[in-house]
Length: 413
Image (cartoon, rainbow, N blue to C red; front, top):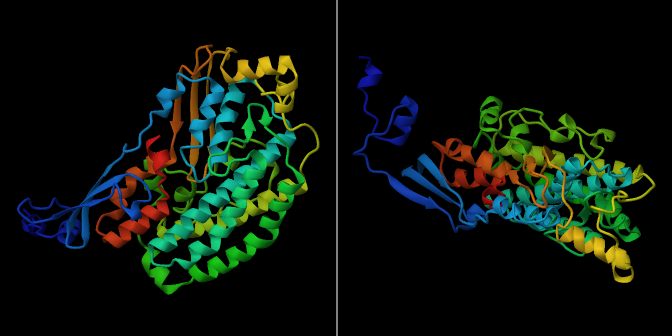
């Protein structure tokens, strides 16, 4: 028997150093971080075993707002499922909406016009910017810096105004249709988008980054905190900014392009250590790249229709519904699911604000999915949270959770 085997760990630090279990008669504290706590940003629980202020181990508890979206989807027509998708990650709703529309379009074999694809790219990149603005500014709040949040929320409000111009909604949007968009970009929307990506947002991001990127207090709170290697992140199934922060340059927009993303020139920001600071910096970099994509889309916006000529699946314009009996009939048949979909099995992924958002759809030829599964990135990477917090303090655990950008609606679905 070696000397190390003779040592009985009585503290969490000793146990971690020796990679041995903690003795049962040592007194530890059980701490519930959540489910209703300002630092969790949602309803989920972390049961932490503490040795003083150090985290020995943790266990997640999810499902507090589980709404059974997948089961509900099996009883709904395809069009009515759209409103379920934007209530997962409500910080970037259009990406979820268009991901679902792309899935159904793949099943139906619909070719979306180029103009509609570019408009979708613009809206999805604005949604990504909004998502990252919220995540990074809230990380600042959770580490004690509130001012940055106030700076960027003005820009998020401008993005919501663009959504409102497109569809009348701000948070849970519904601006797309199977086969294209519900309406074209208006001159007002184009003017708002140009001002955002060319003027106000670059200026505000410059101020925001000066406030945080080299801030000694912020760096002390985030550098080498909650790190994860690229190999370990891939074993968990990480995607999106959390995977790229660990040095893996996987992006669905590049690896499996959709909606004409192959037409755009942009970089994939990657980190090195996979820690909280790298996740923050990767999201900042992606905001700049998203602005670059939006500028390209506006400059090269194709002419032509903004929806496909698919009477059986594309909702007719409202002005026609009010005036034309045939349009009214098609509107009713489409919304109420009176048209059978072809049998088939498809999977479509999009690069969401948190990572790969996927829709696995099985159709038996009926009017609703036989089976529908949502790939929710928050649910996948949250599994690594206890491992990333082990040996750190409660304040570190809060920063790590914030940098992972766990969205409760997506986590539970």
